Length: 116
Image (cartoon, rainbow, N blue to C red; front, side, top):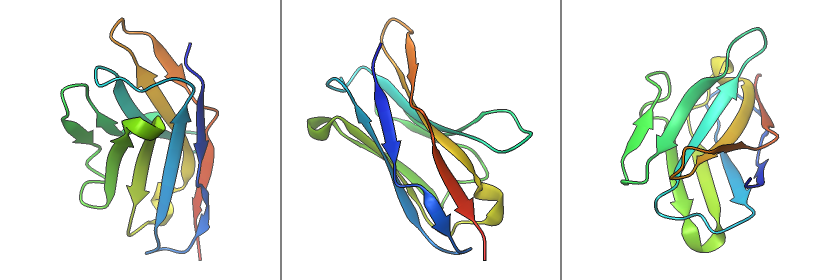
């Protein structure tokens, strides 16, 4: 199983920005699917953004135009740039890797709080 470590969360005012990072314990292969999920208190975990092995991206409707997922294979890192943050973006954000065999790995999560 791949170890994933997220960082970059914190407290930010509405309208602000944060960049989350997820470092993997092994090389991120081009055939790996990478994703960011989030879970708010009392809610189910939901997909925020996904970067597929084919290079396509998928975003939740609620974050389209505000969030951008990217990867740097040389650094074994996936990023989530979050702009124009809203209070409803408050959640624990988790990094996910799914390999070509369908095996999934999760990070421990990083808290993002959007509040004035």
